[in-house]
Length: 111
Image (cartoon, rainbow, N blue to C red; front, side):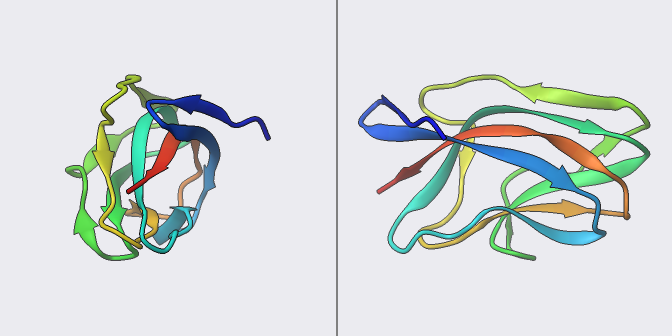
């Protein structure tokens, strides 16, 4: 894994490869840090609603986004971040059904 430095905190990457209805951990919690999503890509193999959350079943970081088969979206790269978890909370992807959702995230662990 390569780690680059950008805006003071190392840039990291996570693979999205989930197909479980309900809570799916994308990035594990780091004590005393927030997970700030800088960019990414998400694609669904079927119809499903997705939502990013701070912690499993936690605070919504996005609205529910309805995807149909073979569609998805790009999270544009933003140095200041698109959204971030609360301190010491994992980044969760909630799926409304057992549908394969894949892609990647570019993120930082920030104070």
